[in-house]
Length: 266
Image 1 (cartoon, rainbow, N blue to C red):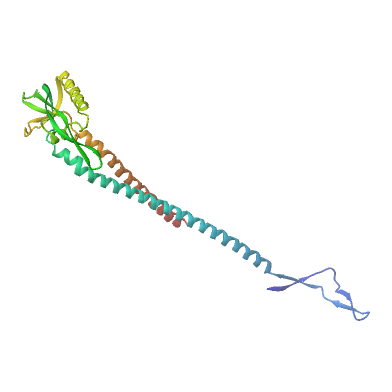
Image 2 (image 1 turned 30 degrees about the horizontal axis):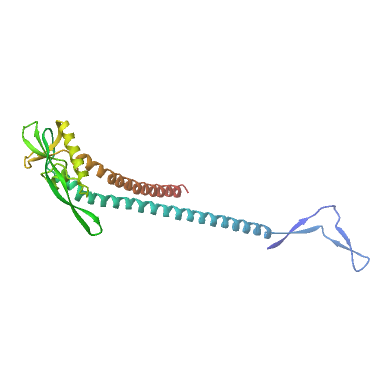
C-alpha cells in the first residue's frame, strides 16, 4: 500500500516559479513536495525470511524424525536380543534340569572317603556289540576288571566302579571300555588301568552314606563341579539378557525425562 507523505521544502521565502508549457507565462507552484513511501519491500523481505525459517524448521524436524526412527529400531533390536538370550538360558536350564541336575540329585555316592585297593584282577570276558556301518552290528568281547577296596573309615570291603555310567552298565566291572573289533587293544587298556591301581594303594572314592549300595565310585560324572560348569554359561546368558533389556529401558526413561525437562524450560 503506497501512501503519499507531504514534505515541505523551504528554499526561500518566495514561492517556486516554473515555466509554463503553453505560453510564455509562468506557473506558480507551492513549495510542497510529495515522497511516496510504502511497506512493499518490507513485506517481501519478511516473507522470504519466514520461508527460509520454515524450510530450516522442516529439515530439523525431518532430521529429528530420522534420528528417533533409527534409535527406536536399535532399541527394538536390543530388546529382541535380550529376550532371545533369556529364552535360550531358560531352555538350557530346562535341559540341564532334567539331565545333569536330576542325576546329581538322584546320586547316592555323595560322601568322600579314603579307600585302600585290595584286589585288581580280570575275572571274565563280557560280550559286546559294535557298529560296522549303517544298520550293521557285530559282536566282540572286552575283559572285565574287578576291583575291591576297603574303606578306611569303617573297614568295610566294597566293589569299586569307575563312575556312574560304569556302575549302570555293568556293576561287576570296574571299567567298561568302548566296544571295538580289536580285542587286544581293549585288553591292553584294561591291563594298564589294573597296573595303575595296584601302584596306588590309597585312592579317593565316593561312597553311599546311607549304605544302600555295596559299591563305591572312583570319580563322579554328576558332581558339584560338573553341575557348576554346566549351569555357569546359561546363568551368564540370563544375566546378560536382563542387563541389555534393563539398559534399554533406562535409556528410554532418561530420554523421556530429558524431553519433559526441556518442555518445562521452554
